[in-house]
Amino acid sequence: MDKKIENLGQISGKVLLFGGVYSNLQALEAIKQIAEKENILPENCICTGDIVGYCAQPEETVQLFKIWNAKSIAGNVEIQLSEGATDCGCEFKKGSRCDGFSQQWYPYAQSKLSKDSLNFIDSLPDHITFNYAGKEVIVVHGSYENTSEFIFKSSPWKTKAPNFLENKYDVVIGGHCGLPFQDEHEDKLWINPGVIGMPANDGNPSVWYAILDDSQNTFSFKHHSLSYNYRLTNKLMQNGLLPKEYARTIITGIWDNTEILPAIESGLQGFGVNIN
Image (cartoon, rainbow, N blue to C red; front, side, top):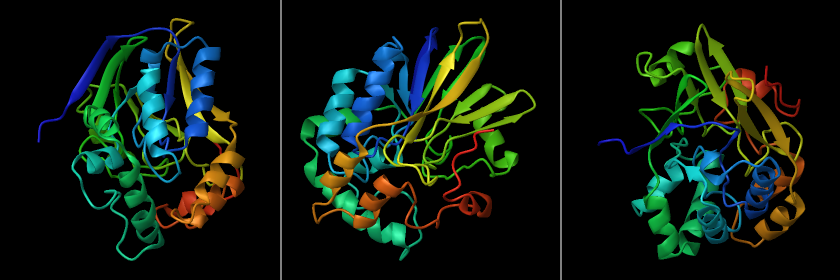
């Protein structure tokens, strides 16, 4: 299938990067406020996908994202919703806890979205590309070839390397795995800004994003933590239709399980986020 790629061309000024909104309206409101505080234009705000997910307000979240006019690629959740699929497409192991939870939150999200929201989701590109401070950048969800592939800091570079498409790109902005990180190899850079819809399994309810900055005429970036009204998010998720375990994670900052994590990331549960 041909890839739908949106090329933004040359862009400048600060660029806000985030992923995994996961139907968390309160987190989306907070990140939008960051953009406004930093005077970052909507077209310089880029999401790595999965606008819809585990939390209680999928329709409201999509509509706010649409009104904001920020950019996003399609995550696996958007692709599955667009195709009317019966599962989230995360490729969780059948019978796993994550698989069981997805059989709760995915049908819930599917039932709440309007035709207008589904049309918006269907319009999202597979990838976004742009030039920034002399670097060619591509945005992927999991990986270029597989939207659902989990790529972490500890993933070997040989797994990351194909996403630079034989040196066509200098920087990959990735999503999907839920954890913020950076990984540099020779002159290539992988940045995962983290997600705003769920904590990073670090024992803190705050969530993560990143900002690119070309003010010194160089390519620079920094990860940031984001505080938001997580108590309201938690309360709204306690509706009897969504996994109570995910609602608990919103408060504790600890994932219910580490099924998807490599050994290194699993061992860091509850120890905070170390970006370096």
